[in-house]
Image (cartoon, rainbow, N blue to C red; front, top):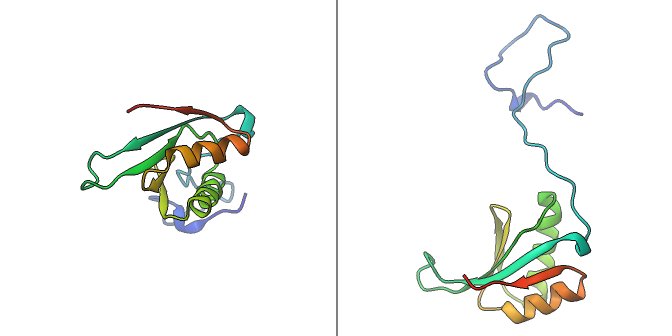
Length: 114
């Protein structure tokens, strides 16, 4: 593992050559196969100034893989979105289009009423 000296917290200098800096990095879990994922898709309008968004939750895996899935969904729907707190947020009411896409990709998808 490459040591990232910028992430050292509280340590300025150590004379101990065997000292390993604590970087407080969170280890990400391995990404599950699409057939093992249990995603839920729902519409949300709360705290969004009246705008409707479609949220995909329940993804288990690395952030990079979630970002890649988000990009595919945004391209398929022709709309914008983002990834926050382990959820993919897609602008607009795209529930059926997203569910169809995820099923074709091999994901287990459940429509959730929130």
